[in-house]
Image (cartoon, rainbow over the protein chains, first blue to last red):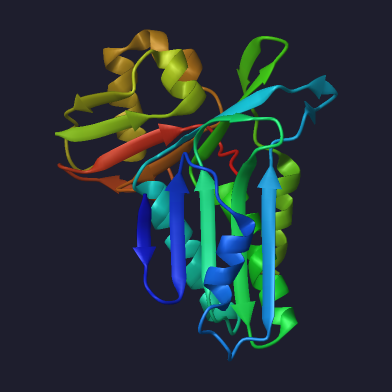
Length: 158
Length: 81
């Protein structure tokens, strides 16, 4: 479901996969004032903490997820000069190798786009209400939040 | 009345995703927890874990006020991305 699709911000929480080329096209289309396009995409890897992983289940808090992503994007817009922003996060059952998350940012110059993209991912990690359940050797277990993610997000406050 | 939601590991531990409760005002998130535990003493262990609180879909502290009609949510630290 797409929550808000004005000309500059796209947020989507969806079970469906996304296409990187299509998303970059959307960021660039009729946007000749921005020279920089920075994107991040995250996928399900086949290992975690020394264990073999065969898949993930992603749960979220409908409503609050979109609200928190909007708030993260607003903070990024206040900190840097940004043209367009796209954030896509998948939910439900995902296999190894499947895409989970996409963040794309355009700006006139590269530094604002790099910083905003990293900031959005760092804050998404610690404040957007998503939870991963990992499937490993036939056993399902909820992942624990990492201290290192908290520490990374805090760095933006200094 | 207050609508209370639980997510992820907490939801599974409690065996409940939603409950409606009444708390005397003025109330805070901490009062909601106390009311939940008074109704369900077996939830004590689950509620002693590290968790986050949201009121009307905004992350808040335990001291945040809660009013009639609010949506209060309890969940484990988030692990998306």
